[in-house]
Image (cartoon, rainbow, N blue to C red):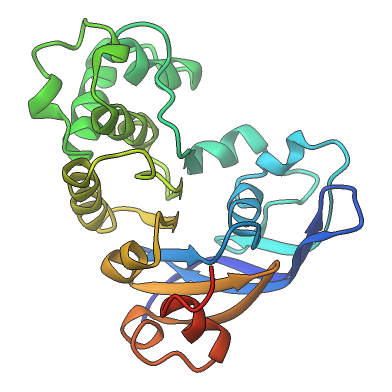
Length: 253
């Protein structure tokens, strides 16, 4: 039986204006699942992703209701350690954001910020994470060179590896292949299929086609609401809601 890792219950959210970004969202996400959230622009996908590790806290006017349970604990509980939460639920954004400095600096920064000082342990974590992100063979001989010299696809995999070095439980990916060429996109997608053996991946995809290719389970969102959730083998072949079918077949969006 699949283990539930994240439970989103009756969540609504707005940025302080009259329009609700999310309306009564309910989702159950299992461990070691590649869960995709897709839909047209302004449907609430990124907002929902940012709520999952409380990046929404950075919006002072934000208002929310409902609960998000991570391994049974409410992430909005007053005693929740938000820094620790963000190490357990890491986010990678659409635009790769390497830090100034070398590839090694990028990979070791988060570990040092987390209090790790043992160079041997850091090096082991670094290599393991780069291997998991399918980047090690490409950079192992140039760890002391600038991260900005990497290609777009390599930068994105570096950002994924940087999160993996912290050994999170969940990786949030917000449109991680939007600016990549087809070959780099395929490399990232293959990495994700390997990574879900060790991590739970929740992703906003670049397109419906990508969602159908990679998802184990998917949720279609429209105007801040979850319209339909199902295994991808069902949802993309035989959706039950006409709005889902219209979006998948390109009638709108």
